[in-house]
Length: 98
Image (cartoon, rainbow, N blue to C red; front, side, top):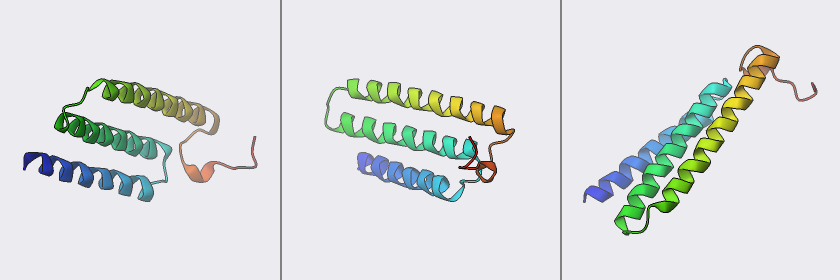
């Protein structure tokens, strides 16, 4: 019964993160934070699922490694965009500008 509650909470948190990702897309920082939230919820869901089936937790460490690399890449893109454009608004970016 407790595992069912954990699955329900993780699904609710996942959909809350997806809602923030879809609705709050004005700033790049908010988008990156919602993506990191979604990754952490997926890690929680995967950790609960692997413990339920009593599998190895080694795959979760690989997942965390890739999520850290994804976060560092997103942060470096954010820093480079703020340095070139002065802000992180999506409306100030132009596709035609090099």
